[in-house]
Length: 222
Image 1 (cartoon, helix red, strand yellow):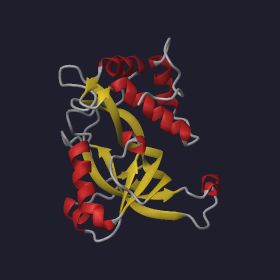
Image 2 (cartoon, rainbow, N blue to C red):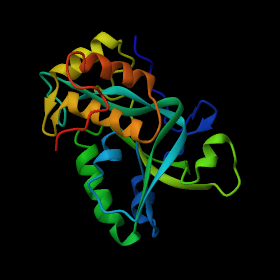
Image 3 (cartoon, one colour):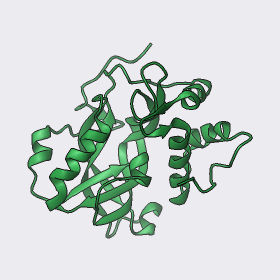
Image 4 (cartoon, rainbow, N blue to C red):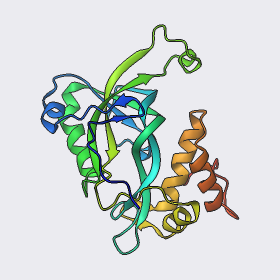
């Protein structure tokens, strides 16, 4: 049985989720930081001033969203990533100049919110442009508030925790406006590897998807 929806302002794994209104996000007169954890890492689609490895605490990356548009259809859903409660997530933080803030937000909402399955949140992230920070050295680390797209657990497209066989089936069948679901998963795994990281669940899925085909680390087609 799926968990009952919770208030997104409640704490997750000891870290409070800061739920911000669209008005606050829209009206801020400052550069915009965007935290990417899926396709935004390898295909942001917007201009940026900085691209920095980053760590988010309190939410984790999970294949927990049925895709009805970009990587599937309502009749044959695909499966895409969302940020779900608890844990941590390594990703990429992009800094957008404040003069492009409004245009970037409009682009992201058109891309990410076609069915409003995500919550727009502003969350603190640690920028890891200094590699010593991953080893626990806190001196000189940068923290910023970044826009993140976390899954809305009350939305009908929230898939919850699916077993590996169900994930494989959905990803293999999924094909939407942005292409095959399989390509989405494998491209994300390649980007995670390029950061020197490992996501055990995604790598296991990639091995199932590439059985008899190319390896997850192969160069993707253009």
